[in-house]
Length: 121
Length: 288
Image (tube, rainbow over all chains, first blue to last red; front, side):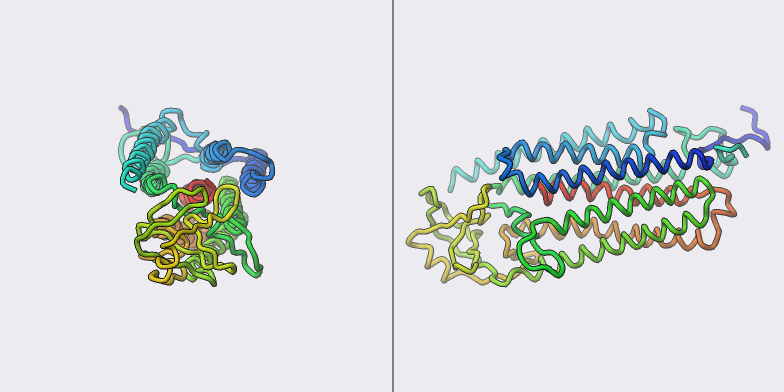
């Protein structure tokens, strides 16, 4: 590899006024999405009984909406979408595998311990 | 310098070689890796919360019966204030990303305005959390009674042992209630039985919550509340401090001279992460 005084690489740290307008529009669009999801969560929390919905369904919906919110924050506000694919996978994949495994095994163990306690009640 | 990119000298950016891994700057990549490790800590907290909650799921308190206060208002407002706090934090995330956007246009005025708004939002959130802690520690006006060991009869006729965990909700009607006091349809779980009066008389009055006793139910609920929201609150606070330092540098014109506002982007990543964690805490601690 030949090194020279002029050798450099470039990072995207600037954009033009026009691009700025587009980015700002994106930011506010995502804001309305996040606000909408939060409002929906609160509404569901207050009215699910009077709407005759099932609590298990509501729980699943809450978790799904949370992951959706997380996606919008990470992809758009943290600009994860603009990074290269290999970096996205480096961050998301090992983390997800570890956390999903931890959660599943801990909940499973907890329910087993609950049943174990119940034997001696 | 082209219109869309900023030339970074290879020696100063990564200190050797002419290539940047993942085409990213050193600082941003390391911030991401730090956030991954921090996210593992929070996942550990929430997963262990899930563990204890499911281990004691028949007596675990429901957050909507605990966090019912709203400033300057009386009555029962379950989780409304927490929802408002969530909104405030999302809003401060918006102002942060607007500061980053202004930085990309080298708009010093814009960056300082939006950074300032972000700091204000963060301070309101930390203040709200302090307010919530105060009410949780202080407790309700009726308090509860921590009982000794004995048997009681559930509304459906089944007999349960208190194991020292059941508490009486000394509410206006002085009914004796089993944890978690209300079932899913919102009805009080009133219990009876010959031994109940005796258990109550031998019990200890508890007001509010601390690391050992918890008026609202299982003491572990209080422990997890203090640890999870406390650890998150510490992150918000340190985020405000970092934002403030960068804010001062913006005002001084440090980044204008440097030619780019990448520091604002890095501190922004941390701030969005704090918001992201709260999204999960809101769901898993308060909502479900």
